Structures are given as structure tokens and as C-alpha cells.
Image (tube, rainbow, N blue to C red):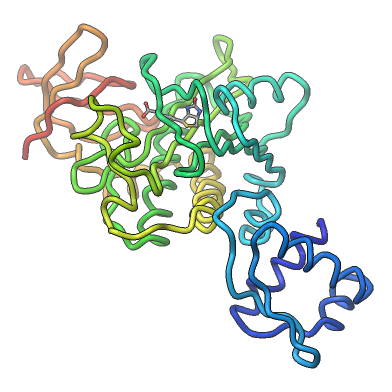
Length: 325
Ligand code: BTN
């Protein structure tokens, strides 16, 4: 573990209390001079750290900057997030993951960008990704699933994102089929899963997630004005992006694993958080309009829609345009 990560981890474990410099040094196998140099580095990038000649160091404030050290310090050791890269700006983090996967990137590698110039959503839509206002990131996955069950990954990711937002921000986040995370009927986060697969094998799944954390009204294009929102707009206060990043990655680690081994648990949690199930809905699959009753998820993560004729239709993807009780 890098010294910066280890020192921040010790500060978070101390939860606002002082940590003695010699304890830190012994624990991290660093000289007190190195500890003091590392603390100075953290201060340079915006951490507020109180130093006391006898009591040691105490973390008083953190900057609103995504860094791999800080996210890892709060995350601990997990498969998802074992390696984290943070870019100031990229075209799309999904493309960066694809590139890194080709050069042997491991499952669990996560790429964040402070901003994206060509962030994309489903169906070729643009995803607005203003600098420093959200969490725009992608995860490299190599799931042992047949391509027919790829929908499980998106379902698990939507549970993880909704759960993390609920638990760390105290917001009533809900899921709308297939992959939107909503608050007060407005879209707060979206998920774009892209696959590289052959008939019976997924080589690579790129899980791209965008969460509007501290975006203001001015950040949304006119067309999104009525339908998109951010945590700040919904709660009237700024949210800690690093803390949220760590809780989303921890939740992804848990729910992705469950998606591979025990999908029933994921489907149950999804059903609890989802606004689409148990309603009469209209799904648009391209130009095709399908109306029916959203009944359940099947074991591959597809939505089962009961048509008026009684016929059961299996839906993968699509846009739900109407949800009625
Ligand atoms: C959607 O709701 O349409 C999906 C939006 C996904 C956006 C994220 S932001 C990080 C990653 N990189 C992209 O270009 N898109 C995804």
C-alpha cells in the first residue's frame, strides 16, 4: 500500500481523533521524518491536518478532489477498486477501460475522470460530465457468465448504486428499469454496460456509471432540465464525492459477486428498490412499443412483462416511458 493511502486510512480509522506520529511510523514502517513529509504532501493538495507536538496528527478536512489514494484508504481491500486510476479529463472512461483491458488490465480496475468530453449514455445519447461535479467512472469486469445473462451485471450495479446513495447520502434512491437510479422521479444516475463477447462467452464487460453529485441546474442541457437532477439539487447541500465513490465501489464489490453466484438475492433487493415492478408500463425497444404488466426479473436479469393477451414477454434493455400503479 502506498504511504499516502496508509496515512489516510489511519486518519479515517481514528475518526477525527489524534494519531501519534511515532505510532503511525511504527504501524506503517516509516520513519517519523517520512511520515511528516507525507503529511506535508497531503496538506499541499488540500487536506487540513492539525499537528500537535505530543498528540500527533488529526485530520480536520479533505479536499473535493478524487484521488486513488483517498478512495482506496476509505475502501479497504476489495476486488473492485484493487487498482484505481483518476484522470483529469477523458473522452469516455468506458473507452479508457477498453484500451487498458487490451493490455491485460485486471478485473476490478476502476477509471474515474473529473470530466469527460465525450461521455455517452445508452442508445447513443450524450452524458453530460462537467468537471468536479459528479462521479464519472468505469469498471473492468471479466464475468464468468454467458452473454444471455449479461443483464445481471446491470441489475446488480443499479442495486449497488441505489444502496450506496441511500446509505451514504440518506436519499430515497429508487431504480427504474433497466438502469436508471432516480430520486423524486428524476434521474440521478445512469449505467452503461458494454460487452465484448462471443456466442457463449463474455470476454469483457465495461461497466460505466455516471452519478450527478454536485451538479447545478446550469449543468443540465435544456432537454434534461425536467428529468435530470443531482444529489445537491435534491438535498440543498454539497456531497462528499470521495466518500460516495468509496461506498459505491464497496457496494459494487458485494453485489457484483452476488450477481455471479446468488442472483436471487440481487433480484430480491432490486425488486425492493424498483419503481417499475408491479405496474402497467410501456417499454420502447427502438421503434417497438410494448405495453404490459411488469411482473418480475428472470434468472438472467431480464424483465418479464405480461401482455394483455396473457403472453409473457422477456425484455432486455429498452426505455420505460410510462409507469402507472
Ligand atoms: C445512461 O443512463 O444512459 C447511462 C449513462 C452512463 C454514463 C457513464 S459516465 C462514465 C461512463 N463513461 C461514459 O462515457 N458513460 C458512462
